[in-house]
Image (cartoon, rainbow over all chains, first blue to last red; front, side):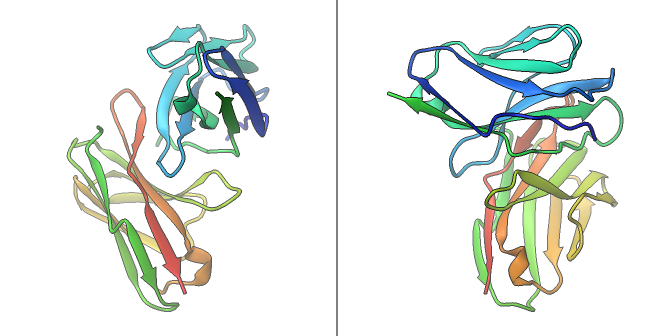
Length: 111
Length: 111
């Protein structure tokens, strides 16, 4: 399974944008990039995913580098409820769709 | 809500006793997964199922077995619990868009 590298922790302020980076230099051409987040004492929840083009949804935006070796999850206006561990995961297009979770980035939001 | 529940939510058991955790879905999805999460680790896949009676191992399957006799239920069994199996266990289902939805978790303590 291709691996991802994320910073262990990041800090931001409420109502400011947050850019969470992820490196995946060994990504294959058919791997999707998924982001999940885990709020305290809860199971992970899906945030967004993409293949090549940038993606937007109600929760966040995903910016994918042209060579696909890195991506950035963008929270446009962070709230205290966005404090969580964010996981960047590569998912193979075929097969059982197993997700391999790394350590993730612990995001702290300051009021 | 994705319609996924886990039972029990908390359990304390003694070393050597059998334990069964249940995951129930109301969504009729084909794929179901069991993960464990320990401090300092992301989620690690134990077993998964791709249909009734169809299961396969994940990365940390030793000491665990699973069964899926109905689409809606996926059982995880610890035949003889050990202290190293003290963990939080999450069940997940995968929808047709390849998003995984996670249950609330079961906190298992083996004394």
